[in-house]
Amino acid sequence: MTRQSHGPIPIYCAMSKKKSFVLRLDPEMMEAVEKWAADEFRSANGQLEWIIAESLKKSNRWEKLPPAKVGDARPDGWMEE
Image (cartoon, rainbow, N blue to C red):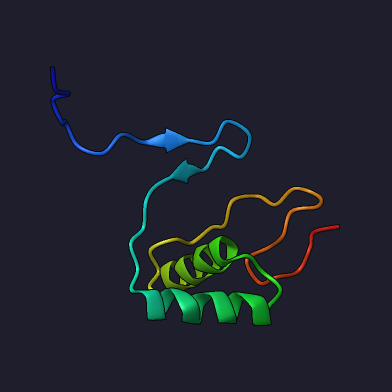
């Protein structure tokens, strides 16, 4: 018996309410992202979120960032206090 595919199955993190998905990158591109993230004291995932957020803001496709909570890292790398 095989499963009928109806597209990707969204996976949600219960604690952070963020949607998880698989992203395939060229190994050299991922290495560059990891180095950039380390330079800015972020995880690779955090760096990718920041890159996407900046791109969306610059293209006027995302005007408002989600409200920050105390202790959350902002996309610019600073912590909310």
